Length: 194
Image 1 (tube, rainbow, N blue to C red):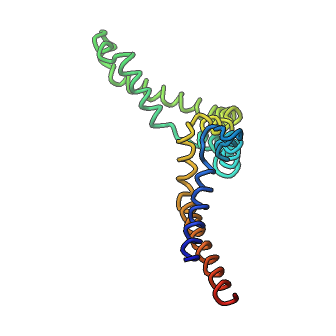
Image 2 (cartoon, rainbow, N blue to C red):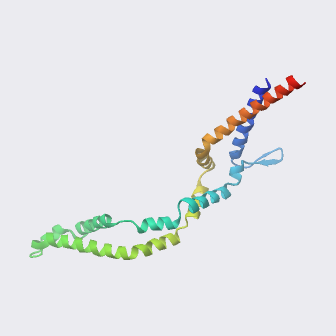
């Protein structure tokens, strides 16, 4: 009997301890004492730590600036110029103008080519300065921390437990195993040494 009781007690205490990490979400007064889950109580501190680790180890503004600086925008620029020339200049209207209408197809093609070339030339010159300015102005740590702070308590708990759900279940089971082993030792001591 002691091993079974020990297993139940070990599992139950670990289960309750894990739940108390997250609950209650908001402070509750019980018998004059205020209780709140450890993680909700330290939520701001935890969100800052998560954001700091992500910025330091995984993704920072310099990485984003480099990615932005390395983008090839040729197709996008050509598509924008195509749309502007077709919808703003309206080649169909140009065709109706005497003499110009005869060369309008060649004119619009040349205009698209020249505009695309000029825009890409200026973009290439400014891209590294833009990427550097972007990386200087973007504060990944504070951006992440503010996004985490905006999560409601249940979503925040879900975010954390999604990462460690298996490990928490193992801790619960481990409590049961340790309780069982303690019960075996108690039984051994009680029956064989007494």
